[in-house]
Amino acid sequence: MKLVITLVLFFIFKVTMFDLSSINGGSMNPTLTDSDLVWVNKAYYGIRIPFFNDYLVRFGKAEKGSVVVINDPTKQSFNGWIKRVIATPGDTIAITNKTLFVNGNNVDCKSERVVNKASLTCEETLEGHSYSVKHLIIFDEVQDQLAEVIVPPGHVFVLGDNRSLSADSRTVGFIAINDVIGKQVGVLPGMKTPLLVLLVVFVLLLLKPKPALSVKGHKSSRMGI
Image (cartoon, rainbow, N blue to C red; front, side):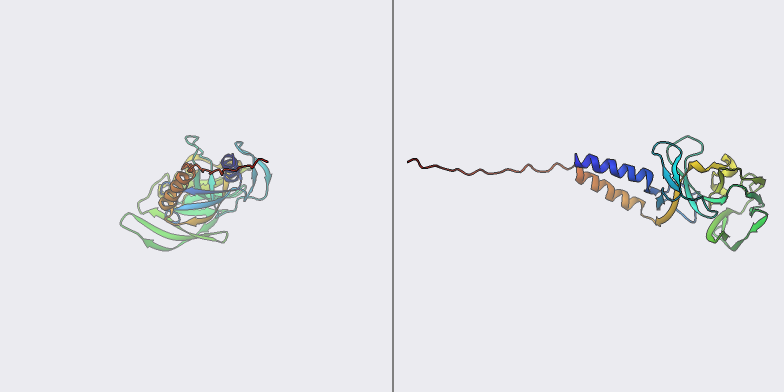
């Protein structure tokens, strides 16, 4: 019974407060890699109603430059997407030949470095958040060009840091704020496999049957008078 209560409390905590999520795919490379685990604060923006896509209490708004986990906008899986918030309600966003513009301001990508013959990395700074982004050297009209749009109320515009190989607001559109599950507040680099192994070991230890305890009785005798 104690195990059931513990699992229920853990599940509620995982759904509404904090979660440890694994990175699958390279859309946030070089910031996050496929072997990383990230801490997600699901209560950063408010307390969500479990199993409902709404907030019971809201604390704040998603900030530009922050990394967030969102519900899969394609509705094809229950796995969340991890992306970076680039623009918030009322902002204008445009991309011209790989260069990002927010509210008409050029978000410079500095310290450009060629990684290999096909791609390069550089450093962007947005609202005090500095991070690395990655581009393919060749031009892609879908990923490297976006006519100016205005983010509507109740939505955000998100991008992956691996700009040429990310499905994000350029293809799926604006993300409803209610679909922002939480904010990334930490990362455990390269820890996905070791932690999964530890988790399996922990579960196996919980399920391991405990040896039965035998209690030896003692004989007592009464003396008759």
